[in-house]
Length: 377
Image 1 (cartoon, helix red, strand yellow):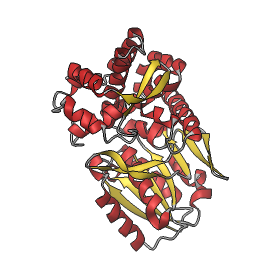
Image 2: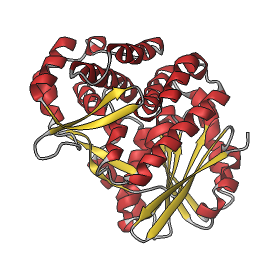
Image 3: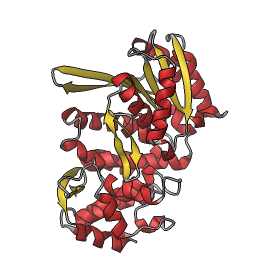
Image 4: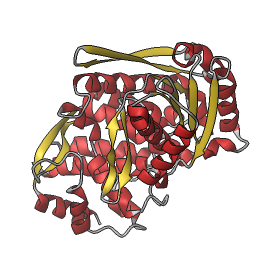
C-alpha cells in the first residue's frame, strides 16, 4: 500500500512549520526512503519500547525499520525504555539526556521515538530540551498514538500532582504510521486506542461517529482499509484544530474531551496496569456526556448512543467498571484542581451540546461534579 501523506501546516510567528504524516501498510522496510530527507547524514538516537526487544512480529517490524534507515544515517544509537507510565518521570528524562550528551550529539542530531504514546511523549520531550531543541521523528506503534498523541507536538512527563504536567510543545519533523504493526498489539491496548478514535467523531464530526457505529466491528478486527481511513480522518481533524491553536490557549482544549476525568481515574490506579489510558478515556468521555445531560446541554438519546458504542466495543463506561480502584468523589475533585486547563482556580471541562459538537465550560461547579461522581461509584 502506497502511503498517504497528510501535511501539517502551522504558523509560528513569521515562520511556517510544515511536516508530513505518512500513513500506510508495511512502511517499515521503506522507512529510509520515505524519511531520507530528514535523516540523511545525521546522528540519530532511537528511543524505543523494550517490547520490541523480544522475538515477535513487532520485533520483526522494528528490525525492518532499523535496517532501512541505517542506509542513510551516519550513526544510530538504540535506547530501550519501558512503554509504561512509570517511565514518564523527570528522573528518567535526566538519565536519557546525560546518555544522549555522552553520545556527542550536536544540533543536527535527531531523536526518533518508536513506540506508543509514552515513548512519543518521552522522546519528544527529550528532543525539546537537548541543546535547547533538536529534531524529532515520531514512529507511533499503537492505535492511540497513531490517531492522537503522535500528532500535534505535545510532549511531557507526569508529576506527583497529575499527568503530563511537566512538558513542552515540540513539533516533530515527520511522523510515520504503519498500520500493520497494530496487529502485534495486545487486544486490550488496541481496543483502548479505539476510545480516542470515537472521541474525534464526538468533538467534531457527527457523520464520522455514525460511520464508526456501523464499522466498529470491522475496525476492531484490524480491517486495514477501514483502519487507514480511521487514522487519516483523526489526523486531519486534529491537524485542523492544532493549526488554529497550537499551544492550547482555546479550541485545542476540545481534544481533551473526557481527559480531565480520565487522568484523575488513571492516578487512582498508580499507573500499574489496572486501568490503561484508553480505558480511562472511555469512562471519562461517558462521564462528560452524562454531565452534559445532567446540566441540560445534551439529550438522553445522544448520551445513550455514546455509552452504547463504548459498550459494544467492550470498553468501560462507568466508574463501577473499575471497582478495583479506590475512587472517592472528594479525592477526584481534588485531582481536577491540578488539571492543565484549570484557570483562576476554576475548573474547566469539555462538554457536548450533541454528538459532533463539543464546547468548553470554563467554570464547572464542584458540587455538581461531586454529585455525578457519587452517583457513579
